[in-house]
Structures are given as structure tokens and as C-alpha cells.
Length: 288
Image (cartoon, rainbow, N blue to C red):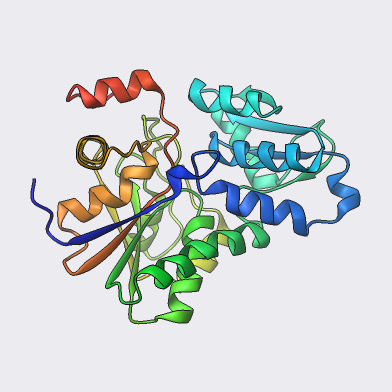
């Protein structure tokens, strides 16, 4: 496959926890009230934010608890546990309720929202600043969209420093509430489908994040699961880079041509993928 643009990769998968989430989680924990932090840290996560919070808690010497949806990959669950986190698996709806309410019932300590925390978004914004330090004139930046914290952080930095750069969010077509909302012109819930792209997508947008994201982005794209799998293969085969499903969303959009040409920066947000899933993909399959 020949790329339709000049593609650059921002490799957040090589962070110590294999994901960009370390930036925001640690920044939020360090800027929080120490008396709250002393009681422990908690979050709701499909895996990567959980690792970021667990890593921060370990550095600060406090306990951590992570509530995860019951489909969370064992690769991510195991990584959280190795960092000392207590991991609670619950049905998706219960996990989403914790996201909406910003708390886990029965768990003490400071809840670090995986998306809505402003210090977390500020930490994510350093990615945008680093992009412009290395590449001052990108035409387009593509960002995988989960809850909006990554998009808000990066887009805020990019638009402040170089307003001419277009910023687009990318979702898989099986879980694309942002695209549905942009198309409808109002917040729209979708029929969320679980897939191997576990670090992005949701059944609806968080109202606070929609208000922040809407004025910052120039639009959004969707990609198919087949396109995501192909992007993962290309990253592995040509660059020896391992990306998880969400981490390959931006590249999938760039390779499809939907984001146009010129200099395109793709955020490879994470690389925490189960080896069984990766093996299927490298064998030419798209996991169910």
C-alpha cells in the first residue's frame, strides 16, 4: 500500500506504561490535594488510564483501585496488577456509570476521571507541543477518540500555537458517537459494539467533553475494523511498531485517504494489545 500523504507518527506507545495516559494521570495526581491523594487513587478505565493511575500511585506511595469493563484485555489487567492496582471487573453499564458519576461506590480516595480532569487534559496537551517542536508545519493532526481528553489536550495546544493546522478525531465505525453527534448536530447515543479496539469509542459522548471538543476540532473520521487491523499490520511490518487497536485509528484514517494529503501526524496512542489478538491480525485476520 502506498501512503496518500506524508505521514508522521507520534509514538505514545513507547511511554513506560505503553500509553499516553501516563502524562495526564501523573500530572493530575501531582497537582491534586495531597490530603486526598494520601487516601489512594482510583479511576475507571479500559486499561491504559488504569495503568497511568497505578504508576502514579506507586510513585507517590499510595494504593490504587481501577474499575474496568468485563471485556478489558487481560494484557492491560495484568499490567495494572503488576503496578500494584486492585482491579475490579464489572459489566459495561456499571463501568460507564462510574465514568458519569466520577466515583466508584465503596472505594475511598481521589477519583481521577480518565477524561474530564482538567490537569489530565493539560498533561495530554504536552503531546501537541512536542509535535510542533519536531514538525512546525503539519497540515493535519489525527487523534484517536475515546472520551475526548486526548483530543482536547492536543487540539488546545495545536490550535493555540498553529491555528492553520487541521485537527480531526478518529473513531472505529462500531463505536462512533462523536461522528454521529457531528452528523446530527446534537448529542446522539449509538448502539455500541465491543471490538478489539477497546481503548476508544463509547455509547455516547460525555456532555462536558462535547462542549470542549466541538470548537477545537475541524471534524471527525470513522474507519472500519478491517482498516484498523491493516494499519496495525503496516506498523508492525514496516516500522516494527506495536500498536493496539485505538493506537492504529489515526493511521488507518491517514492511509484511507479521507484525511487528505500533505504532512499528516498520526497519534499512536498506545501499544497494549493482547498477543493473541496481535497474532490474529499479523496472520491477516480481523479479530471478531
